[in-house]
Length: 164
Image: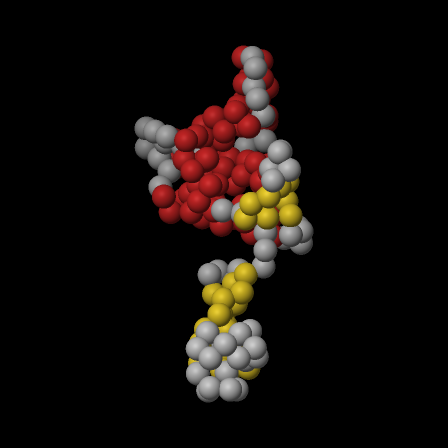
């Protein structure tokens, strides 16, 4: 690593620590030439390959922006959306691939969104999976009813129903 002070082409790592939920490493470095210390951050690359073939870095903000539209008018907080974006990124990083197809990002969003809010999930899935008819919606609703998510099974517990 080049020293930002004297431009010497080498430095020594003094300390390393995880940062940003473990997705980055913060390194404290020292230049052997001038003795100055400086910090660097290292991040494993995760690029998204779009349909056009162009690549861009993964962005939690883009995940949140896309899901926020589906959650409009729903009881979903910004913290919930940030946690969903983090879960999506973790899922994608677990694949071990440096480049992920945009289609896989959408698929990785579906499961945590369903756990967060089934109505938002249905809205997102309808656009993402390109629903064209009422039958498409009915089929997805039937799947939602057949395999309840963990959140849905909690919301229909007897203690919740008795509050109505």
